[in-house]
Length: 513
Image 1 (cartoon, rainbow, N blue to C red):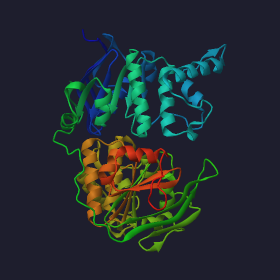
Image 2 (cartoon, one colour):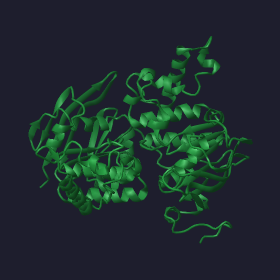
Image 3 (cartoon, rainbow, N blue to C red):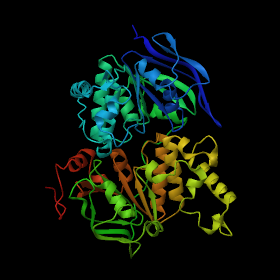
Image 4 (cartoon, helix red, strand yellow):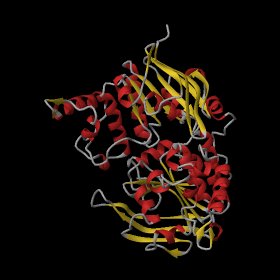
C-alpha cells in the first residue's frame, strides 16, 4: 500500500508583477519519501516552496497537512506544522556564533533567562547522531559554505521539523560534501521524515529521490517515479526539447599567452601562510584552462588577486604583454571579462534594475552617453538585446530589480554582460552554479565559442563533470599551490580526486609523487 500524503499543495497559483510564477500547480508529498522538484531557472520551484514555508501567500489553491487544510501565513506557522527549509542563499547572521544561529527564534528560556546549556546539549546530540559536526562557538563568517549549510540543517532538526525542504542544497558544495549530504538525506527519509528537494542536477536526483515532479515556466508538467526514468527523459521534460548533455567542441588551437602568472602569492586572511603560494602558469589565446580543486584551497584568493580585489604579496601578473601586478581594478578590467564566484557580492548591485546592471562597467562608453549624461534609451535597447540573446527571464524585462530575479537568471545576466564585452581574457568562476541543464548547455557553448574566437578562458570550477567536459588543460590546486597539470583526455575523475585531496602531487618535472 502506498504511503499516505503528508503534504498536498492543490491548484496553487502565485503571481508577481508581469509574471505568473506558479500557474495552478498540484504537488503531493508522501510520508518518508525524497521528492525532487525539477525545473529550469525561473520555473517557479523556489516560489512554490516559499508558499509552503509561509514566505509568500498564494492567490489561489489550498495546502493540506495529513488531509487537513492548513493556513500558513508566515514561517512561524510553517515551523509549528513541522515544516523547515534550507534556502539556496543561507539565512544566517554572520557575526553570531553557530549555536546562536541555530537557536535564534526557538530559544529555551526559564523565568525569562536563556537556557543555553540545554540548547547546546540538544544541538550536540543532533550533530553527533546525524554526523553533522560543526564548531558551535565559531562565528558563521569564519566557517566554510559547506559548514554553513550544516548549520541550516541543524536549525531544522533543532525545531523538530518532520517535513524538510532543501532549495538547491548542493549548489555551493564540493563533491565530497555532496556525497555526505545525500547520505544524510537518505538517513532522514529512513527515519520517516519527508523531504522536498529542489535541484537541477540530474545525477543527484537520480541517486537520491523516490519521485520527481517537473515544472516548466510556472506550469506543472508531470510526476514520475525515479526508477522508471532516466536523465535524458527528465531533461527533455524540464526544457521542453532535447538537450545535449555532453559539451560539443572541436580540438583547441592555442596561440600566444594572454595571461602569465609567475611566482604569484596572495596572503591569507585566516592564517599566516599564503593562501596562494608561488603559483605560475599561462593561459593562451584559444584555450580553456581550468583550475580544479576542493573549495577553500586558494582558488578564490587567486582570482581576487588576479582581478585586483585583493592585493598580491609577490610575483608578477602579465596580461596581453603588460605587467599589471600593481594596476587598479578598473585598469585590469580593461582587458578582462570576469564572471565572479559570488553573484550577490561581486556580480550585481541587487537594488539596481537589470538594465543598470548590464552597463555597470560600460556606462562611460560613447554609445551610452549623450553630452555627458547616460542615454537611457541606448541602455535599455542594449539590455533588451542581451536579455533576448541569453534568455534572461524576469517579470518586467530591463526594469526588473535584480534582487527579485531567480538565482539562475541573475547568473545569466552577469554572463551576458561579461561575454558581450569581448575582452581577450575571460575569467569564469563557477559560471554554471545554480543553472539548469538547458542554461548550462548554452553557457558551455558560449565559452567554447569565446575560445574559438581566439580568447583565453580561465575557468575555475568545483564541478568535476564541467572540468572534464569543458577544459583543454586542467591544473589542480591544493593548499594554495598547483599540484598537477592534466590533459582531460588522458585522465579521469578518480585521479583528479587524489590530487585535489592532497594524496598525490606532481613534482616539477611532471612525475607523480
